[in-house]
Every structure is written in C-alpha cells, then in structure tokens.
Image (tube, rainbow, N blue to C red; front, side, top):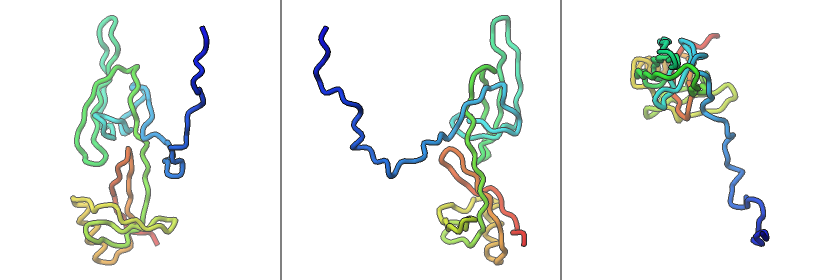
Amino acid sequence: MPRSTQNSKMTDHSDVDFETGHSGASTTFPMQCSSLRKNGFVVLKNRPCKIVDMSTSKTGKHGHAKVHLVGLDIFTSKKHEDICPSTHNMDVPNIKRSDYQLIGIQDGYLTLLSDAGDIREDLKVPENELGKEMALRSANGEESVVTVISAMGEECAIAIKLMSK
C-alpha cells in the first residue's frame, strides 16, 4: 500500500509563545495512600489539606485495605474526608512557605518585602484574628514577619511574628 504523500512534517511550533510559558512544575505529586501520614498533606475533594486523622480498615477475603482520611483545608480550615484503597495513589500538594517583612496595609491588601528586596501587594489581609493582629502591628509600626503559604495556585498569609533583631 503506498504511503500518503501529504506533508508529514513535525509539529509546527510557530504559534507557540515560549517566552511567557510557566516552569511546567506540577502543583501536586502522587503518593501511595498507605504512605501518607498524620500531619502530612494530601489533596481531598480538589483542595490541599493537612491530614488530621487517618485510619486503616481491613476488608473481606478479596477486598483491599481501605484508608479513611480526614483533613483540614490549609486555606479555609474546612474539614474534608475521603476513603481510598491503601494501594491507590493520592495527590499530595507541593507546598511552599515564604517569609516576608510586613511594610504596611493599604486598601485591605498587605504590602510585603521579600528577602530579595521585591515588594508584593497582591495578598489580601486575612478576615480573621490573624488579620486583626496584622492591622494592629502595622498601625503600631512593629517590625513583623508574615509567613505566606502557597499551594495549587492559591496563596494566603498564615502567621505573623515579631522580627528578630
């Protein structure tokens, strides 16, 4: 049978903009369910969670052992639960913690300075006791360090402490 004489060149990359691409790093990585541990992290119901409780149950003759996971969303503290066979893989979020110096608060957004000297003003002040403490420290002119956690494309401030001299 004769081969097709159509133009069979490789993929044309002229329409792809390589200048603005992201690193391609995944927001999660797989881990076997039985390898997960309490106080570790896991993705439950598409949310990054800290595991607060887990238990393993043995099932009948030919069944799999099941792992019952209970986790708290690392951004909203909402409780999520899931049950999966111990041999299956679960997604674990890649979590990054960063410390920034708090410069001030303007229009409900934090003004933060990184160690590299970069200023960012895109994080909202948390709407809880932590946010009130940040506003108070900023108003008093205290030099504070804000810890920001980021996972799966989301970020939020999770802690504030006095800057060590």
